[in-house]
Amino acid sequence: MDENGLLTILVPGTEWQRFGGWSPETNGLFRCAVGCKKLLSWSPSGNNDRDRLAAAEMLRAMIAAHDFAPDAKLNVITHSHGGNVALAASHLGLAHEIDNLITISKPQMDAAIYQPGENIRNFYNISTRGWDWIQYGGSATKGHYKTDPLAINKTIDTSASKLKSHAALIWDDAIRETWWQWVLERRV
Image 1: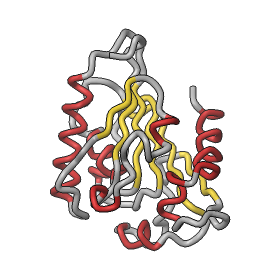
Image 2 (image 1 turned 30 degrees about the vertical axis):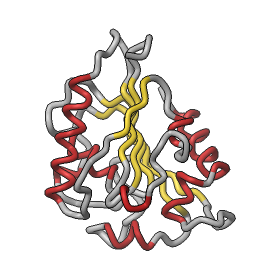
Image 3 (image 1 turned 90 degrees about the horizontal axis):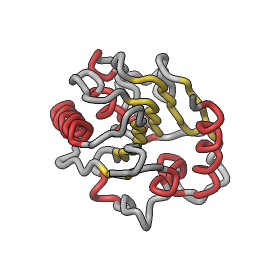
Image 4 (image 1 turned 180 degrees about the vertical axis):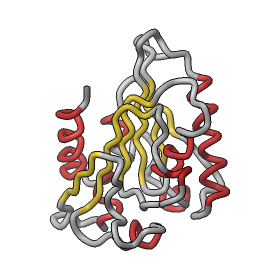
């Protein structure tokens, strides 16, 4: 347990095992995360409701197993469909409120299970300003695939990165720092 009972859970997206980059040494999100840092290793992680809902149950169980100090916060930082996993988990009777949910390149889904539950205090959705064909292809709603009408949305220009836009928000240190500072300015 972190001395303050704070927990930050990182939730990767679909087929995250194939693309790697989710170890503390290779993923800059671990440097942003504070408190006790855990990775939700959901598997299988296909682009389907069954796998996302099974991962949501795993996330619910991970939160329930953590020993939170009184008034400790829970942060959940997600990438791609990991954001939809966290949203689905918010409907499963979480043992602790999610203080800050940060979704990065989350495909927009319209089903009720992928809308934020009442136990999410702050919901930030970060997307690229340019084209993100992975986020677009994974979205059920093609018209507004980058924004979530129930979140505070921010778009970040990733055109200077050598990485593809879907990856740049996490693995490009300068771009990640841009949106991270934006989140820190808004946290309660």
